[in-house]
Structures are given as C-alpha cells and as structure tokens.
Image (tube, rainbow, N blue to C red):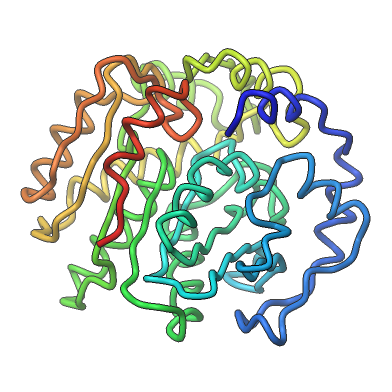
Length: 328
C-alpha cells in the first residue's frame, strides 16, 4: 500500500455505532456476483474508502461484501472475482484484526490473477459476536470450513493464506481433515507468523489462572508488531475497530488449542511457513519446532528483520514476504 494511502488510513471517520449500522445493513451472500449486491449504504462506502479496499471500483474485478449465517454467528464476508481468475485464495486474518487491514495482501493476490475470499472472524471487524471472545478455536475452524463448503463453484485450484491466529485456524482445519482421512483442498498453503503459543505464554496462563472466575477481561497491552511506523501508530491510536481488553475465555481457548495441536496426528501435507525473527508476539522458536514435528514436510522461510504483522511490515520486508506467495 503506498505510503500516502497508509497515512490516509489514520483518518477513519467512522465510530463503533457506525460499524454496527453497517453490519446490520449487509445482505446475505450466495457467492454469485449476478445475485449478490453490496448495499449502497453511505457508511459502508465510507468504510471501504477509509480502509482503501483494493479493486472496489475496478471494472475487471467483481467485488462484493455481505454476510453469511454460520455457527450462530453473522459473519461478514468479502470476495473479489477477476474476469479470468487462475484460482481462488482464501485469506484468514489474525487476532485483533479484520479484513480492512489486509489490503496489501489482497491487492498482491489479485495481481497474481487470484479470486480472493476473506471474512472477519467472529467478534472481529463487521462480524457479530462478543468482541474478541471465542469458547474454542473449533468455532473459528467451523466457520472457515462452512465458508469453504459454500465456494465449491469458485475457480480452482484453491490456496489459503493465514496470518498468526488465522494460520492457527488453517492448521486446525488441516489437522481435522487429516485425522478424518479427507483430502487436502488446497494446492498452496502459506502460514505467516503462525500462532501455536504466544510470546510470554507462561505469564498469560498464570494471569488466566489467577483471574479466571474473578474477572471477565484483562487489559490489552499494545506491542509494536511492525517496522512500518505509520501502520503501528495507526493501529494503536487511530483504528476504531481495535479493542483494548482481552476476554479471559479466549485465553482458555488458546490453552486448549496448544494441547489440541500437539496431540493431533502428524500430517504430511506440504505447507509454507514464513516467520520473522524479530517477532515478539508469538513464541516462534517453540512454534516452528512444534510445526516441524506435526507437519514434517513444512517449508520454512526465515526473515531475520521481520516482526509479527508480516502483511503490514515495512515495504521492503513486505516485498520479501510476497515473493513467497505465488499461487501455482
């Protein structure tokens, strides 16, 4: 994303009530451009403009935004369908995030000739659900699996890219398919800074045991996760969809996810893991070791200068990330 656009992102003109109105205005999607319609809601149009959603006015790309009802959630979904797509890439964002922060990656994928499908996780962005809360990562996985089932008519081959918690959701989905002896639906799988165990997990679990049953949430500590100063400042000080408290139920879900990942049968499907070595959000040393054990055919790409939010890193680092995201 050009620097002038990144700076403009600091001027988000919407508030929490506006986002609720947008959410309630979204039509249900059937993922057929002829039948799906993006509401002409001035607040939605402002949201798409403020976050610089790519190709939203490109005559060669069908762009739609709406929702699906799944797993008890009203989940906001987006898709981009070029005139002559060479496949479809599914994108799964990270914790605290939403699709509006992933314009760099979406634009890169469209330039690669990909149809792109993305959604806001429950409790994030324009999806409903208690903010940032989930009882189990299985709920995230089920939402993703349901969305995938609705897209059988989209262009093949399928690929998937997940960032952090999004990568964890993809890993859980793959492990579940593998355990049921079902085929892998993806030709390409890219996992960016995948989350198994977060940084300083021992402190988080100590806090969880101390506060669970006494408090519902704990204060979020913003930690810089990108060398892109403009993005980091925007995220901490100007992004109205950010939340400053973490539900303790999510920490419990994370605890169970770590156990589930390590107890699952190993999977021989090839995956590509891209990891920055200046990441202080996830415990990447532990995570990579665990992934290599559970996915012995994983290809590892190390980026010595990169921090955690790889899709919003400084432009030169981001270019290194995108060098490895090329659908076959």
